Image 1 (cartoon, rainbow, N blue to C red):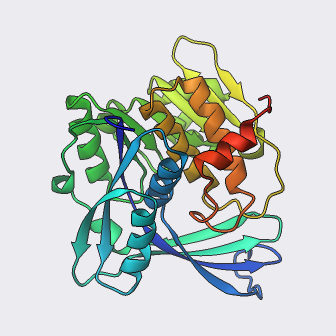
Image 2: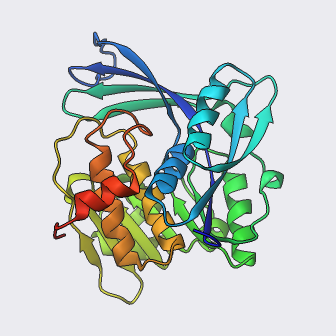
Length: 301
C-alpha cells in the first residue's frame, strides 16, 4: 500500500441496537427483542470500511471519552489496521447511538455525541503523505471547515459526507472536491431548488462533484459540465441497513486514494454497501477486500 494514504476525521459511537417488528412512530412504544452493542459512528464506520476494502493506508482522527466505552471503540480501529490519532477527553462520555432496527431492515437512530463534540481545529494531525481527507458532520462544523481548508491548502482532496443534514457555510463548500449525500441531505443543501430534479439540485449546491446515494436505486454521480452517471444497486437479501451509507463513503474514498477513477470507485462502493446490508452491525457487517472481489466477480452493473 506504501505511500497511498487517506485520513478520516470524524466520530466514533457505541451503538445500542434493538430489533423490533417496526420502527416506533412518534409517541409509540414498541416491544423490541434482544439488545446488542456494536462499535459505530459515521467516522469510525467509514474508516473501518476503507481499511477493510484496502487499496490505501487509512488513518483516523477521533475523540473518545474517559469512560468504559472508549476501549470498545478503540479496539476495532486497531484491529482493522487503522493508524488512529485519538484525542482523550477527560470528564466526557464517549459518543453513543440508540438504534431500532425493523424486521424489514429499516432503522431509526438517535445519537448522543459526547466526546465527538470536543474535536477541535487544532487537533488535525500532519497531512504529509495523505491524498484524501474524508469527513462527516458528527463533529463540530467549525472543525470540519478548518480541516477542509487546511487540506485544500496542502493539496489534499476533500471528500465530505454531509450527514446528518445541516446547512453548510460557503467557505466549507468551496473546499470540497467530492460531496456525498443522500436524497434528503441533497434537498436540504439545495434549498429553494430542493424539489427540482437531482442534477438541478446538485448544480444548486455549488460543489463541482456530487455523489447522491439512492438506497435500493443505487447512486448518481454528477459532475459540472459532464453527463450524470447512474450506478445501479446490487440486489441482496437485506438484514440491516445501518451503516450501509458509511460503507459506501469509506470504500469510495479509499478507492480514489488508491488511484481509481470515480466511476470504478462508485461501482465498488455500491457493491460494498450492498454486502454490508446482509449482516448485522455498522462495522461488523463491513466486507473485506476478498469478500468484495468475490461478490463482484462476474457481476455486471
